[in-house]
Image (cartoon, rainbow, N blue to C red; front, side):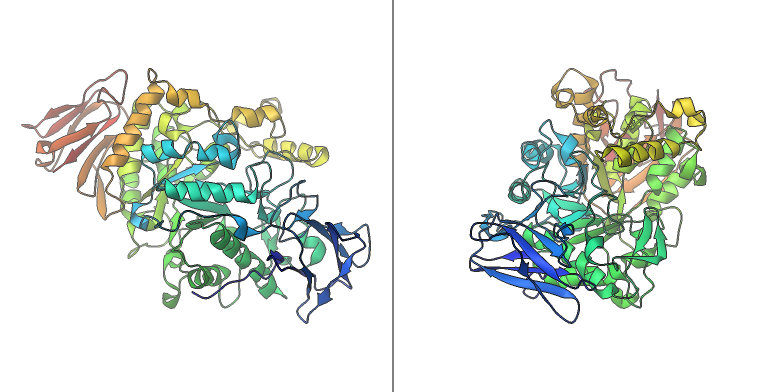
Length: 594
């Protein structure tokens, strides 16, 4: 690890602040300061051979606001593409931030080993009533008691408006001001570490949002016609001047991990990051983070292609990533239990045999993952995409019955791979998670129309009148409906509390990612071993199941989904040791330990 100093944005010290921005085609760049002693006339920046413009201002206090003026044109003054904070929103002035002013108390913190990670994905704006970083701090004791070991925060890079999933981020270095200040986010990370929780951040390097992405005003080279993405032009990772674009995103990753003490990053939609250069951007990014960040990091990709080389070391031809979201388990489980068939679900049978094969391999489709470790596959039965990209934002527990939901939860949390929970999943929350935005009216109308048109290929929404019932992303009500109702979790007399207790018990039983095995016992039932535990999970219907290894049913049953502390209407699973048979009245699971 070597010393690292930011090279972009406003880099503050008590003595001086250095301003630096990449604008290779500009004829002039002026710094417009709003601070005592500065008239606002503009301070000329000096250009180097690579097209970076810079200036040093002595004695500038943290908190000063500024813009850049391009080519002497007062109509072309913009916030800093590497702004550390946008207190007035993404179209307003940038603010000088002093990261050294925050007093950290996590010096003794050590992140859990990767095989012990259990992710809890959350959206800051809808996780608590406050919808802020400070609001999340108030729930950390709850998360620690639940038994997760890491929170994974959906993107916080500032976006237009006050409501967004975060994937429309445009100020990639600036925590969204609607969630709090940079120091509020630092306080969240510091508090999480003091509660024994690692912190991961979702970052988006495959596109920028449609409103307020001022990087384009400074350079025409951030995007390229050579590649396309679902959001338009591809990010320029391999064309002319790509080395500076790559550096911009790598510096962003260094910014979050070094200045905010993060334990890892989740890289959004890496399949959309097209790069034909000799060294793929992901390999360069991962290697740089390993070299320049003092704390151990875990770098996770979201990628549906199921490519083993992404998870192999660079000296073996890989990209050096640590883990990947492996969606095949989710898809197989939904086809079997919720009977989804349209869209990408059409690629899956949902058979017990295929679910077992997915658990054995880590994914079902794609290249052979032989040699990869269980913890390198992140599995879920819900995440923000799989809930929020449904027209009604409905959760899995609203599409399957409670016994089936409990059985799937057992498989997820005791599987050999790394589990991920989506906020509220542990108490079978009744609130949806809908798609919401807060764009200016013209763009907002197009987003609403586009959102509804996305579902035109689905049978339920083939009628335009039916599509018009899909919640409007622009409506504040859509956002409010997506906020968790914590009173559900607090009420001990409802099924929510019983489900939460099941999750707590499972997370106490979990031994971490470890080699395991899974086999189909019949068309409804799967047997899975991991961490010394044996799970028999019936995912559909009731019936008798013969266990081929007679020794299994003679072991100690340490949990069933019919225990009276995890369900309000217990229908016990019968264990017939003489006949090596289990009898299920309905879907469920039983866990045996030696």
